[in-house]
Image (cartoon, rainbow, N blue to C red; front, side, top):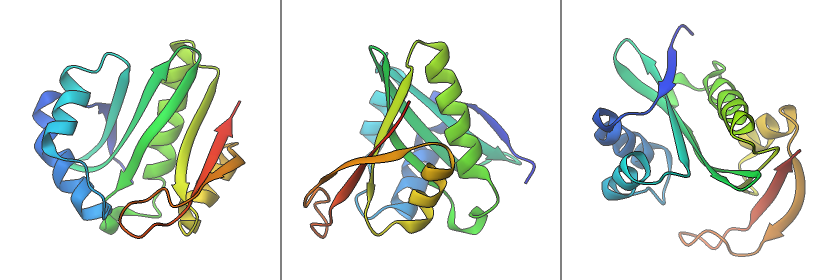
Length: 146
């Protein structure tokens, strides 16, 4: 897949909100993306741009020496093409350049494709958050990479 991964910009906010609602049952609002892109100095967001269309995105917050992955989303029509791996790899690299020598995230216990990707990139299960997801009370695994 020949797409460009670049820093998210203000012009991407609507596309990010639309993609998020397509990918997640608990989608972020447009105003959440607006805050993340325009105001959150701890946040880095990347987009996967294919011929001018946002087909994926990923975000991370840099807090001291840790990077907290907020979301990785890839449009359903473009999954299993390495886009999620590229976004996550680039986020890890950018966070390390900013001094985050470890990264963490939460993932639904039922999201086997994501868990497999995270494991391939060195994330290990460190715990569980019970009933973490509000939509169905599903547990989340806490993963760390260092």
